[in-house]
Amino acid sequence: MVGMERAEDAGVYKLTDELAIVQTLDFFTPVVDDPYTFGQVAAANALSDVYAMGGRPLTAMNIVCFPVKTMDMSILRQILAGGLDKLREAGVVLVGGHSVEDQELKYGLSVTGIIHPAKVVLNTGARVGDKLLLTKPLGTGIINTAQKAKVADEGAVSKSIRCMAALNRKASELMMEAEVHACTDVTGFGLLGHACEMIEGADVGIVIYSSSVPLLPETEGYAHMGLIPAGTIRNRDFRLPMIELATEISDERLLILFDAQTSGGLLISVPSPEAGELLEILRREGIDEAAIIGEIVAEPKGKITVK
Ligand code: CO
Ligand code: CO
Image (tube, rainbow, N blue to C red):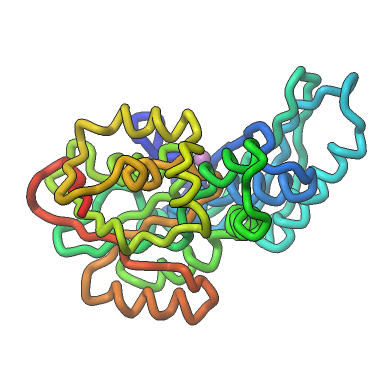
């Protein structure tokens, strides 16, 4: 049903009229210092692509690259424990995995879930009049860069880590109770990069209300200090032709909207009348930084207007 021809992060294969499987895979180098936390973030991130489609993850397998000769095995054990605990929280069973020796540590998972074939939510399909909801604040890339530069505030870092390790499960379940038209998770391409994928070649455009976008603490300050990841700058340069700046938006603000996220939130397109209700439910269920951050418009087609 969904394969390589689409810019989707998970594939969908129909088994029967009632049942399809969703498959995805994600792994990366450490994004936090603490091994256990890294395991948690990597697992939350790998599960997210199933949640973004409205699927229910069931099983997972570890993918490990580990420098056995230079790194203590206890580090690997802590990473795997973090991953396993996050899977347990999600109600997902670890069924195996594979490890290789590598110069650089990498960890992630392949995840398999199930979904009703008629209920697959794609990143395309947003309609004019929809509102866009975002379920987690932006800034994990910039805060991570600030931390590497040893200037990051401890509170900002721990908030960023909590966000990255948080499952998109609840947001996905609640979204599936609404009439959702499209959804994606915000990860490496940043909010605007993933929003571009939602409308590329489509008959609709997007307006983003930049001042409504939730941000992690200190993100703006660090952006003004130039603490911007290289990936964030690449995201902006690649997608700039699709962006229209409606008013005076600073370079820093635009970069924040393109900030490469790890395990970011869901970006959900729902009909306007339902958006307010979904937002209220999300917040009531503890996703308190969810916000309506934009809308789908008829013109200009294939463009994102940042207001
Ligand atoms: Co992914
Ligand atoms: Co994704």
